[in-house]
Length: 450
Image (cartoon, rainbow, N blue to C red):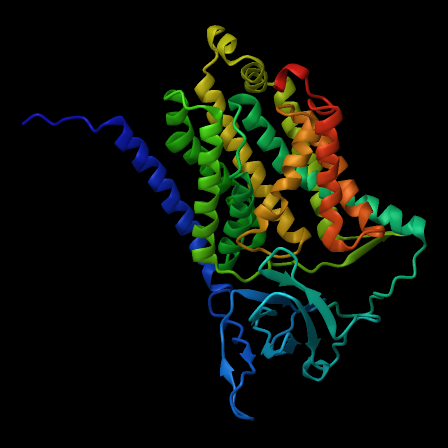
């Protein structure tokens, strides 16, 4: 009996379907929102129109959440209450300190920590607001944290000290954005694709790191594994979707639309498995370090140093290695690179893997910076990543680095004068101005646009 070979399009479909199943499996451990053996945080109990003294448990898609930790570890069994917009609800923190309360609609709510339920010897930091008001702003999840110990929350610093502190925070945020922006710029430079699914690659890294931590792996093991998973996601995307589309001669605009559809698919696959609540990676609350008049959290300092080292390593690989030189050649002229003996498809595959790994690492650092892991966290900073790429110059890696740092600095420094909810608006305004007066960006070339 003669066996017919499997058609190529079926093989490609199987590869891509396998990759999506891998996304499901990798994000599935995080669906519980707690470590094995740790009871989940009780559901919020909401008041209703029932007779006095009668209450009913409800679940809502909009949630307010957080995690309670002090220097000694998580704070379980602490009561948190939420009120506002005709709603009253309360819950207690789980064994890992996490808590979450669903609310019926978005708006402003008052969050109160019942101090008499705190463990003996634990108190809120001096100047810590309790109760405090939280407001939803373009997201279905709001995170609020309470600080404990001897830290002083009240703002008594001078303008110049505040400026120095915001500058340092902006540098940390800018380098964090640069990790994802460099990967996006590499992909655009070698393929011409504007990948709107890059935000979900950022989310994927944080969710997978949380999933590995949830099954009991130490965080210093979970993070490298999540970065490898990000590289695997990049490989699956190119092998199962983008390479077949390139071979068919699909135009860049249809491919961009495909990337939007892929972003939606990945986002809601992650939400289906992970849930809508914001969860915390281990060590999300860290001590603040003082450097003269400037203070920065340990997590933000770690993020700054890790991002700087990784970006320098990527720069070295691009400038000093054969694969880096081949990548720059493909970015400049793919046809000429192929004529010179460079395997263009292999270079693009490596670029997708590197871009996926950098996006995953950026997502993990973003989860510590926010802090919190949510299914739409990558979507929240996708426009900032694009702003950094456009500002620096489309397709230029070092331009993406410079542009991201400028965006990060502007976002953080602007909070001195702007409300926190408006800080991203200024960064996008920069992108619009650059497109008006210098469309090619800071380091871009005119022939790349148009």
